[in-house]
Length: 239
Image (tube, rainbow, N blue to C red; front, side, top):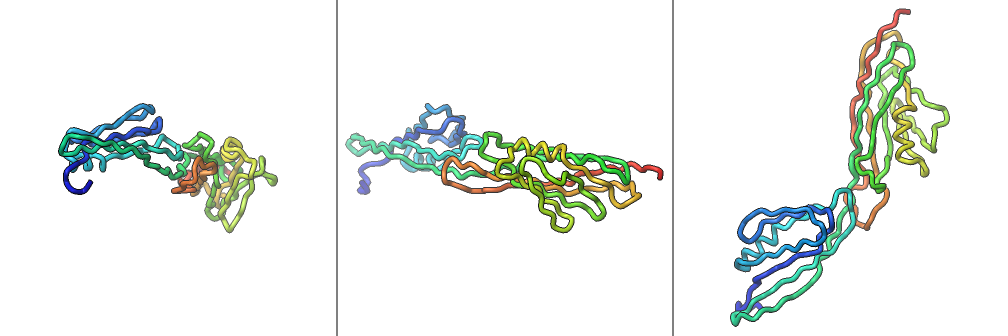
């Protein structure tokens, strides 16, 4: 009714997914926030229609952590006429949540004697451990003269691609997250650069993840990656 005889006097919103963080400013101008348990109802009332609409515009929803599940809100809008009669309209509002890959944790240090192989451990883990993400690759960029040592036959279906001085390890179709992380942690060695040098150096390493199992069709960021420079300390050895 656009003749000016009625106005919106109440808006209620329900259906927030469990674990979602909800924030808004109420009609009185007070900031509100809560973590949804599945039973909450937001009621915007007690002000003018302009104030109610402004409060509704502040509503923000952060989906549950690591969830890309879509959800539906239930909305009820009550209008009041000049004669004090009211009418409530109910409708649903669909919310599509895009999946976003999380960057993994990544850390390492290495040390060894000059001219001798030494362990080159890479410690990495998924931040999103609910099974929806997996490792995509691990890329090691070796400085000139450094030799990266690994088994001729890699375990658990893991493969490696070498382009120049860059080694990219990738999990196979059946490689588990734990297997790939264990290989990076224990399956690599290196030998110092250059021969007869005890100079310390760093090795750039990048590990990527992929959102491999989508709850719903929405997708924002399929892949993510993080990089560090691994410090390598070399101890001089007399020949």
